[in-house]
Image (cartoon, rainbow over all chains, first blue to last red):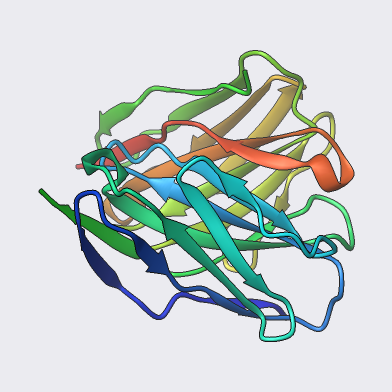
Length: 116
Length: 117
């Protein structure tokens, strides 16, 4: 069974600086998808970025980028120019390509604090 | 696009009553809808997977008779907590999938906070 591990329960960063959130996963599959979701205090889950395992190029979305290391089974999220609105819980998630329904397997989350 | 709504956003009920939570995909037809439960400061716990027109698939440990799921159309799924008790108090979140294959992504509703007195 696949597992997702986020080893940082909490991270803090100064506004305008860069922070990296860690995520590792365990799988025997070769094709899968990885996601970072953000959950602000409103508790609305928001998709931040996704990565297909077959793509070598790291995904980027404006200030958000990932460092995907397939061999190491690592999928870290880098937030550049941190803003106060980035404060939230961040969840890493894994989705298999095999089978139907495409359930997500979730990490425990990292609370990101932005210091003004 | 890809907006998912949930209703109600918050509900308080007495022990022993039933509560229905609606999940709607507003601008797309959802292949599949998922129901999650989230305890404070914890990750999401998948309760069940719901496909339109078929019975929901429940995760191990989730009582089917307690958490009734009806997926009446491609845009609506409902979760009914029957005979609610204080231990059912939690934050319930639904999600809906859009696209297919590698494009498939889950989009989430804003959640429903249930408090059972």
